[in-house]
Length: 418
Ligand code: LLP
Image (cartoon, rainbow, N blue to C red; front, side, top):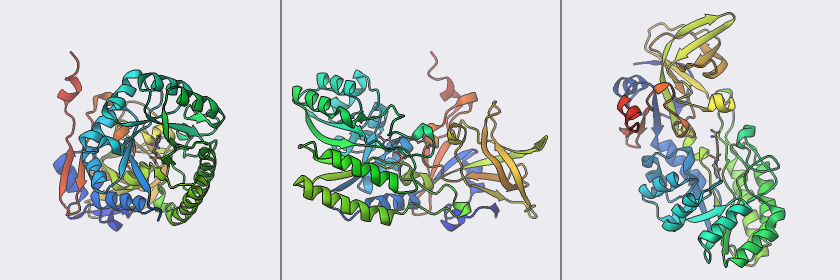
């Protein structure tokens, strides 16, 4: 038995089913990524049912979490996938997706990258005039898509805003004559255009505004079969302070109206796509770690644990906030909370997971759990400081726990050094 000193997300969602965090760490060791299949499937279904519009194909953006077991669930739920590198294409095909269910949206692709997709029959979206020229040379007389910059960006941090004036992504709309010329000269068929304004919007306005711009602009191309509106759908990282989820009902109603109106003006029905990553996998994953102890330096209390930025890079990379839960098996835990910095075991002072977080006094062996870690968590982890990457466990819908990735070993650290 254990008690939860802070947080209730895992209790409310029955995250651990019949197992519990102490059993999991004892069996699979610490730290550990744990996913819940029910939550993952429910998020996939929310996205599938976003609009009433029939010709709608949501893609899961595999960069958020590329574990093949999760990709197989995505396939079972009937979504397609968007990919951004040959490695992601490789994983999606290995998970059983047909090349026609993949969309490849690279940035600064090499000839080798482009050829990898071309040889496998995966549709490519290019995101600059020079990349379109390169693609045209490699694969004339073919279908192609172009990623445009709709002029409006959004995101939780400057580093993830991918449209507007300060980004390397997308073709500017005023370059469309050049795009048309290259397309005509090489007998390419522009089957789709796409955007991705950035990652994590909680207010629908920027997405609606950029989509309005893109749909207006799309009317200047006669051959479109689809328009892809990108990802960026946010999740509430501050659930413990009552943050509400994204209003998908409002978004769905607005998109339905826009899609129908577009078709009426365009003169035929086309397919609409979106490509969320975080929205689907984020809340389905948490990280369990071991509290190693408390320490005081001047006026700051440090709560040490074994979750460093090798395990979760988001806090040091973007100052990202993640809710934290604490579990204990002690009989009489101290429940008074005070602010502390939660820090990992990496040899850098910047290795801080949470700053000034109000938490109760913890002891060695208590468990710290980082919420909302299923997107850009394991995918961005590393073996820095020669800490092998963690295992990943899936709690299935029937309540069983399944190892979906083994913990790396010291041998894995050395095996490619010849
Ligand atoms: N489509 C394209 C073209 C993208 O570049 C991305 C994300 C997505 C879709 C999916 O975005 P999402 O729905 O997951 O927001 N590492 C950062 C996020 C980087 C997102 C990069 N591109 C983080 O941890 O917040």
